[in-house]
Image 1: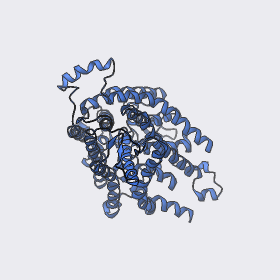
Image 2: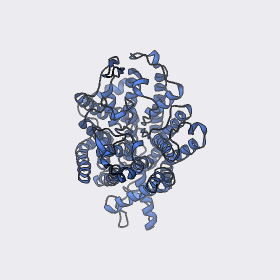
Image 3: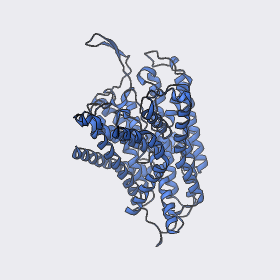
Image 4: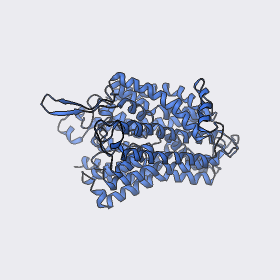
Length: 562
């Protein structure tokens, strides 16, 4: 079993890096402002029609305002679509509009790249809502995260400037040159493997037992492709990627896992190329990869070990299949769970609620540290770069030098914004969980009492605040209290981090780069990689160990000593 797990992880990472390297080169060109040959010739026509110049760059405040206003408009538009769904076309099932609180939750969810779903997609949303509403926002929310990290990378690469690029140009190029073509290829592959893609009415049928049921149809493959590539998550069907219409074969399952990490990995390569030192991107990739492999190994070990009481009775650990799809098995389900929670994706091919206590704790903790282990498209890298700044600051304190990174001094202003950005999501998670546990409306949604019920609440708020979207289940979240609470966590978990990140970019881009001296800490070697990993683990431990001790740790200990 251990050998199979090692080969699975190694083959996955090998193929991932091979695919991500050339994509990283493309992204680096976009960061540097280069148009793509052939298709780039159409850009002047586009900018002329929009009345904007592709060369008109923005300062950090204007760039941030464009990002915030663009996404705020997206929330309003999607909210209206969901409310008015019953009066809009492409609704063969005549599904009614959503309640105001569910529409609000869903609109914020998809615009913030969270894709938390308090509903069953196949019985709640029309084709129009799925395509024009959700799928469009899957593209735009992914482009938003990548655009923000583009601006931050330019801040490191440029010297003594005040501009960070043009937000509208970045959003357009990311969508047209990266997300659309790759999503099209993935969607066509999914269709070839059996994933649904049609606009047919739902098909009635009679089972062999004589029960009359309805078979859902719809444009699944197109939404599935961008939900994975853009680390959006969610699913057309309630069963998500365990549903055979979404994820029909072992091959589509592997491609889905590759798609989730493809752009986050490519951005690490692009970062190294854009700042003129490929070792910097590889160092970040090493840190992410080491934490990732350790987490996968722990989950695989926990899930193959199974429940101690079952094994004591002579049960085979391979029977630990509750909540897992038999087509994928324990090892692949464990790998998928770590990938989807390390990234801000939220797509699942197994029920995390059915994992062992420790097996479910690792995905929860990966979200809580900010999903910086590869992470979401854009958000993973800018989140890890915040930890890089914190690491060089701590190292500077230890050796008595002013911290610097890539030749730029890290001053008080940058550290204040870094601390703020890192602390936003922990504050939302802990305060949101406390509010839910203290109120009758919050506890009313809990279907499981005791330790496991607390874990489900903690997981849900962690998922929302960190823009993941996966769920432990066992929580009735489609109520006004939960829909509003999670919507607030999703919005501020996304944009209250983007604001300080852009502020950091605004100060760094104005600074001159200084040559490395004798006392300069190298930020690309094993020592720095170890310090970076230690910083991520330390912040995660100090912040969440008390909460985890009340949930999955206590549950594990109760099983051991029962």
